[in-house]
Amino acid sequence: MTAILVILGAAIILFVTLDIVVTTLTVGGAGPLMERVAGGVWWLALKIHQRRHNHTLLVTTGWLILVLMVVFWLLLTWVGWTLVFSAAETAVVNAETDVPANFWERVYFTGFTIATLGIGDYQPQHAFWQIATAVAAANGFFFVTLGVAYLLPVASAVAGKRALALYISTLGGTGDEIIRRSWNGRDFGQLDQHLINLAPMMSQLGESHLTYPILYYFHSIDRTRSMPLSIAALDEALTLLQYGVLAEHRPDSTALVTMRRANAAFLNTLRAVYLNSTQSEPPLPNLDLLRSHGIPTVSDEEYHRTAKRLGLGQRRKLLLALLNNDGWSWDAIASSQTTNRTDHLDDEISLINEESPTNVFRIPHL
Image 1 (cartoon, rainbow, N blue to C red):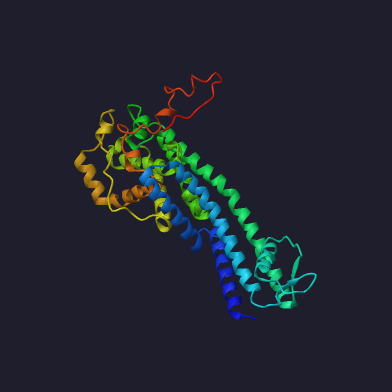
Image 2: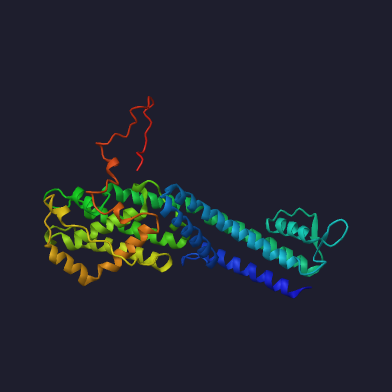
């Protein structure tokens, strides 16, 4: 028996098993292997996107990472057990002739063992290898069970992420638009109720990113369903409401502060696992956008002085990093004067393709 092959194979198996357990059964983010594979593939896709502005590539990359994660786990598990069963000449023999299997026959034996197929063309010899085969089969069953249990809820989590982004988009596509659409001439109406509804949803999204780390790499071409864009726009609105609008006209302070803290918690969750702050800080939203609609605001001097005193720059750098890491620029949510991210949701914009005799609904290309 070549002990080094057993040790090397066992080390690979333990490493992969640890990665699977950390990724699928904990809420601390991805395992070391998955984190590096996913991060590397996404980094490469972003580099290509920056040159060609291909959002379809980013959409495809999310699913590609999901497939690669399973493939890497499977291949490394296969390699590890192949090394173990290659440690002794008589570890695996032909079931009919008792002739020791060659390397490729051991690869074949390992494959159907971890797949729990139990074909029986080849079989282990002696008690040690029989026990090892049973452990390999159990390892394969463990891998398949956890893999299926993990992958199926991912689609649901992606749908939930897009639904939350769309909910925020219905309030407005930029920070000033959210405020403008809520203003009724006296106050912000029921905006505080929306903030109360959104706070637990945002907290749940943060936990979902820890439970399903792959969720971070799912991109949306439709800007109304892009979570990074919606979060950045909502946070801009919260900044304007908290520090730009006169205190007596702000929404309920409990709802406003709770939503702002939920956003901060989400950003901190991503910073712990995925995000690094950018060097540059996006400019604060202009209060003139609110004044033009009759919304009472503080002075520009007080607004900027408060932002500097509270250190809002770090928070805004994280928001910019969130957009950049999803293939967007700050211009996508900067101002309703330059951005019409959600205008196609309005009643004034026809949802019916007039050229289609069947009146099929369509989504305008953004």
